[in-house]
Length: 414
Image (cartoon, rainbow, N blue to C red; front, side, top):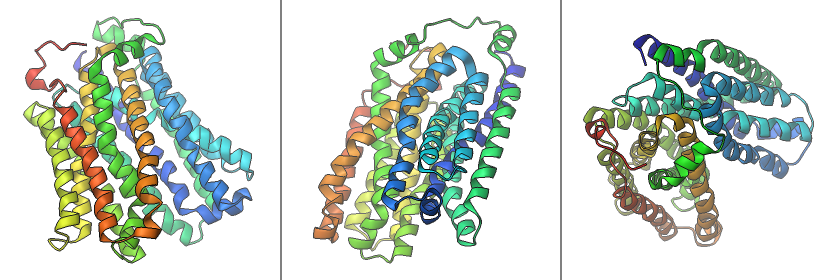
């Protein structure tokens, strides 16, 4: 692929980052406007929380669809379609009925499923293998900034009295504008084929996933990423506030800030670890080092809590957990170029599957017993549960084939 075409893909990737930023804003914003949404949809809080959760039903299933679409139709049509669906989903929240809210949230999940795979697809076209992990890390960093904005920026707006219809209207309009920008900026597949001189290999709709899922390296990448994601998404971002409040007797404000430090750690950790792995030309050492840093920060939190504040512990943990993004680079390098989109869709699906399986186990073993047996020992045992999962991720990482630029000339078994 020539240099000018690569530049077009990098510019398109920047617009893709806007899409991914909006994805996280829209994903996290409902959490800070629950009373207003209850009133708007004339429902109960329990039903509203259930409605918000439907986002993940379409997000998980459409991750696979997004991968097929990217490989079959290219980035232009796929990202345009995803952003368009997301914009319509936001506008449906203006309909003050529970049915309209359900439809809107389902469309939001379906549209958002195209954002991250699309960004990684564009990055893989625009950046060389020597800088791909850095680009993927920056992509996730932008997403986490969007998630932070969805709560720490939108929250104060709601408290100051902004009408939530205004928020959803402008979210929809901005997303639709982004959709058309993506359509006009992303190179078409025929244009890319002509300028690169490399014919695009034509495959069936399901053939890319057959290739990806038959490769054991794909499964290893997804399982590792899922095991590293789970402590951040399930513990820190879901249960963290309750555990710090009840087990460690933190005030609500301190507990919320302490848990939120994981997201701030991600903002720095994803691009930093991606840069390091690109710089040294190896993936596995940085992946394992990040996981070990997660383990050490958790061990300090339960055995040496006086060493430094829990806020710093959780920030360091978030920094190390940026390693969860490295398998996203590995899976693309361990599979053929013409299934790049499906590779990202597959790892998203496997990662989500791992966290879905682990979540009810943790909830049953530790979440439900929080009111009964809260205290230091309860906190210690819950953290050891996550340490076990991270240790398992490190062990599985030893079975990965190195795909960094230092060994890219070596053949990979795919």
